[in-house]
Image (cartoon, rainbow, N blue to C red; front, side):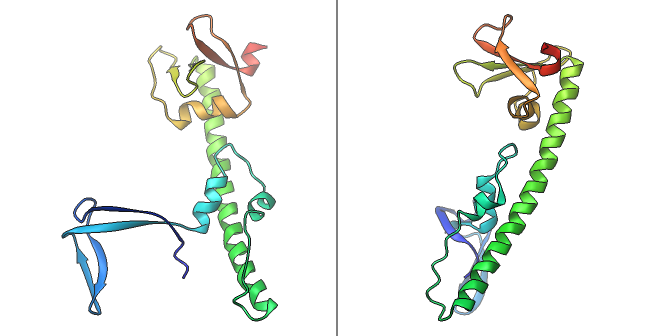
Length: 180
């Protein structure tokens, strides 16, 4: 079986998010009738991705250390090695893909944040609830909170926070070369 590890299941009406398929008397049935159970699977790609975030750089060795093989079902050691190596190869491919994608996101987020700061954007982070942000563009318009608008400010090391003199109870995040 190589479809992943079952993570959780949810029962819902068959029409909820579209039809579902199943086998009945050697016939493939595609239906939206009744109820269904959605199984959410966790594969190697998901496992590796959970260890890596856009700004959370994890080494391949750290990821690799999270795999353990207990393959006594294979009678000889070479068969066990082949199986474990194929799984680690799949994990390494996932790691490389995710690392490349995350680097692209970081580079884009960082350059966008520097450009926005240069234009006059302002970032304020609530001191008590650090998930609350006030982000204003160069025209003073409040902006939505989505990753491209704050992740680089928070994680890149290009910005520095200080207690805001304008917005009480908030930190103000400023491009470092503008502070010093």
